[in-house]
Length: 191
Image (cartoon, rainbow, N blue to C red; front, side):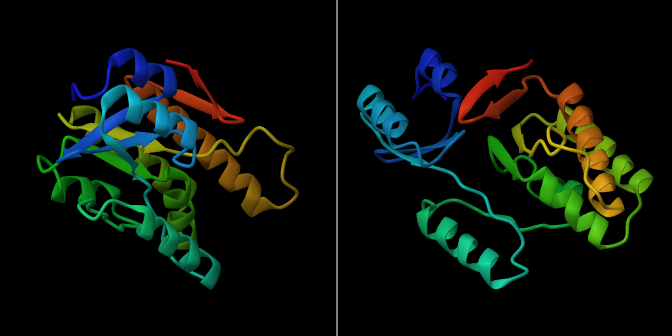
């Protein structure tokens, strides 16, 4: 979308998603970064609203977080809550949007593990999803967490999750046109 100058989008790692009247919705590294939002508003003349996706609510704390995220979203955003069938959700919404944000891959992996899927089954789903996303004409932004930078976890389930997450991130990164790693709020373009 031509609403946001390319140099601004690259500098702040911001992607314009939609425009309705005088409001520009963007996907960005930190939707709470008010300085970036104000800069973009001054540069474009639009009111800027960031997009924040949700996770599955399994306890009261997550329900509260999701409620806060929903309240901050523009009213015209479509949220698809799909904890297990990523490709099915993508197929169902193919050709409906210019940009689809998957938030987040790490929670998706956790959901699959909690359903009892083994590492091989999960990695196959990730490879299939990466291939499907690569073939889509829409821009797809996959958000994930890096969980392998700390110490080796002491329990088997945590080590397995760390390993599956690391493999999944590698698969998605290999298939992606661009890869950005965010550390301490600073975007580092890896690919």
